[in-house]
Length: 266
Ligand SMILES: Nc1ncnc2c1ncn2[C@@H]1O[C@H](COP(=O)(O)OP(=O)(O)O)[C@@H](O)[C@H]1O
Ligand SMILES: CC(=O)N[C@@H](CCC(=O)OP(=O)(O)O)C(=O)O
Image (cartoon, rainbow, N blue to C red; front, top):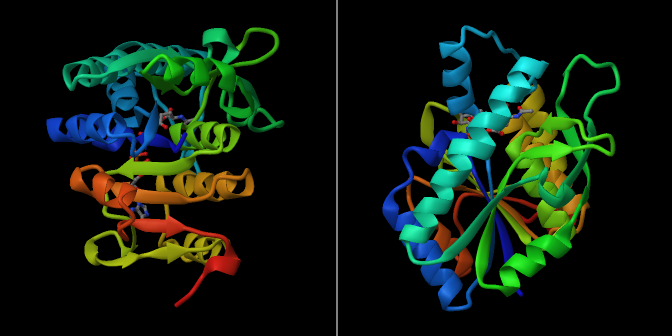
């Protein structure tokens, strides 16, 4: 199975054209890929928190998660966003099943930070891939909300990119991070210079220089984590241009590929 784990960024969800899901379903139907979707939801969580007048802060692109913030993140992502994506996939003509990392302990989680400064932010320590394989064998696209669970039953907020990298590593699929930008840019205000390939050394230099910041930090670090975990290829592509996904699956060069140092060529 040529599994691809697609992370749909919160930034893109409301703007994704209908054709995106149609193209995805066509790629699945023709056997070109077996998709698993992991989604985010940052902007929608922000809106709900704002309505509730709850403050939230970020450290290196990760949301500091109190109990109250966790409840909102779970409600927004495992509730409305997850079911909206399932509905869009059903409308595009495929079976799809929405779950969160809590269901059947899909994403077994621990706190990401021992000091407690991040609150209920989780990192994935194990993925129950048998559930995913079962769903795919029955023709369904699994749609995963990045809320995890620990051995005591505590839930955690996991950044969607981190959850997607963990799933891709566990299932040995390719990792495709779909966002609202054409790739990693040298200047966020200028789409004309895209880094076509990035390695760990280059990524850390771009983070230090402030070129990669905010939500792009967990994205590129997750891509690296995926490679370290056995993912063959990690790529960041643009959801606003739905044919980019098809072009990528068909082997064209799109977006930013995150690769191991030994594969870097100028
Ligand atoms: N060097 C960079 N190239 C492209 N985007 C960047 C860069 N540095 C920071 N960003 C920001 O990262 C954002 C993508 O991260 P995020 O908002 O978390 O996306 P998503 O919701 O898709 O996960 C972009 O919209 C952009 O504002
Ligand atoms: C811990 C943490 O930061 N969780 C993220 C989960 C959503 C997410 O990852 O959304 P994007 O796809 O929009 O980035 C959050 O609370 O915003």
